[in-house]
Length: 190
Image (cartoon, rainbow, N blue to C red; front, side):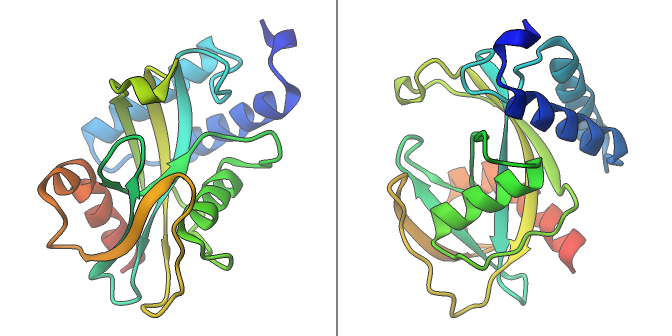
């Protein structure tokens, strides 16, 4: 019920709907996910609230070097693999982009990181590890940004490590998961 969902998450849902409505998906898979995320938002007032449905919207960011040939990744503590920065929405987030920026800054240790305001990719994935608790699936709205090669990144409490990787030399499981995101970010930022 809408009355039970904190107002901050209802406002974030409206921002997500507006962003998704205005986004031109680049291919049929992205269009399918765009429609699924919009349908999910229409069905669930708490679609962006971690305590809402077990499938909920999350946000994230891929960070590339200025030459777009390296990607800054986090060794995610719960997932146990190298991934983009991202996570759940918080009540202090004014917009989906603000949440993605906050998550990327927190997890990378780069306080001045700026993300491009355009959605770079959508992604939908199940969470099978018990470490994710009641979260069954994340429906990601992803953005991209650029950080200097010499940026002084830091490892957060949610990560085991943070490191630069060549975009054409990521670990195989990371390439399978993030390769399309990295290539979409290179096209958008290039």
